Image 1: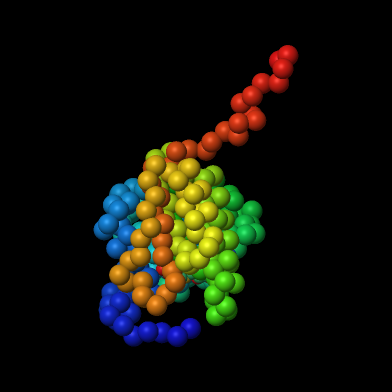
Image 2: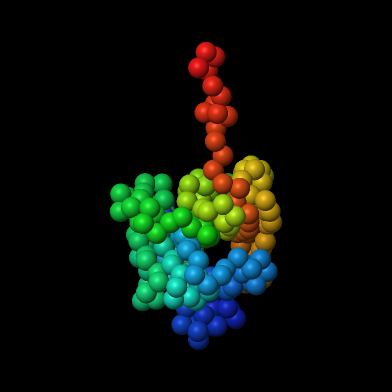
Length: 210
Ligand SMILES: C[S@@+](CC[C@H](N)C(=O)[O-])C[C@H]1O[C@@H](n2cnc3c(N)ncnc32)[C@H](O)[C@@H]1O
């Protein structure tokens, strides 16, 4: 992967983070105040480990961060982080068990991104599929009032994602951190105030005669 030796790249090296992406998380938190000490956080797309490290600092030793990625972490992570390798589209029984044991979560983060092909609409569609999968998981394991941060590549599916988020969360904002390269098509939705799992209308209707 091409490394850009910009300000954030050098800062990450100096501060011993494995990737410059940690500064996006820090900017998101400075703007939206999502983290509190003691929280439980699910970090999807967690390798090489920068967001896990940033989240662990923000929740402190009394908090917990569960990370998932196709790839392994590239750093030794603090004790409050549990990092698992796996695919969000094909969750292992071990990951399902970790979700049960560690959750429910105050915050679900998804910085997942597909391997890019250079074909804009293909990359955008794959990014949208990851974002929708992260939302499906967030719906199952967030506490009411919890928050969801999700990366997406700009494109036509994004309005549908925003629409889904507005149904499930009280507040939804799009945000592009300064530390996200201007030429990158990535941006983030910050969704706060999870309303909780909605019962399907059909399950609340009684059949005639019952
Ligand atoms: C931008 S990187 C994440 C960087 C990370 N937040 C950090 O700060 O270290 C995007 C990650 O999404 C992961 N990813 C892509 N598809 C995935 C999938 N299906 N399941 C889990 N992780 C996935 C990639 O392996 C990659 O490590």
